[in-house]
Length: 328
Image (cartoon, rainbow, N blue to C red; front, top):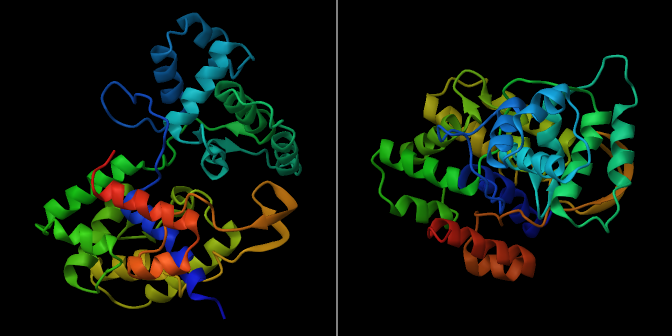
């Protein structure tokens, strides 16, 4: 039977997805029309422009999928990773995000192991962010599969999520105090909250009325916050059970996008164990624990969180308060 602390940490990933997004310390401009780029080629063009890279290099190298180890190319790759949010200077490569852009060959049975070995070989002494981003990227670019030049889900930042929240409050004419209520862990099963959850899900692309929660995107948004196989299996089981009922649109969103990802539904996610884990790119022995950048769960009052959470987890509650207080 899992502990209360486990439950607290489990709900954290959903709180981050629905209420704050992924805080990204990297700040680079997005496309000229103020919309987020969603394809690799769009990010490449934007970064080449912003970094002043000679146009001929696009035709002679980058459009031919060549990314040599010179300074301009390394920082270009970092920029692409920041725009598509598969790279963060602090946390490194977000593998669930970058692998969206590559398609393994059907006959290739070893791409996962090759990619894992490449990433594991990256020396800790490589601290330059452009070089580290470039070398990490090349592990996928050269080992995982073929580049897919199509739209992919770009995880939302904290600022984007904040604006979406405000838009949803405005759409339904809800009082500003609602955000404080949700921050305090109160997500009542009422029409206003149900429609707020649905609105956020729709505007982020994490939910549709027809298909329900997008489990793949939710996993990407929560930044590998749990073992992927467990995450998918438990989420899909709960969603399927809820979708058997005839519900209104707002109630369906609340039941599947919120209730299906609470700690009592997905209680395996925050367990800390040392075991052999099969990941997206191979099998290895690892210690699986709640990621250090997960916002603490919002299902209890702050006084209880202080008692039950680690100092690191409580520090993240302070970050959450800052986000809601517009302290950017």
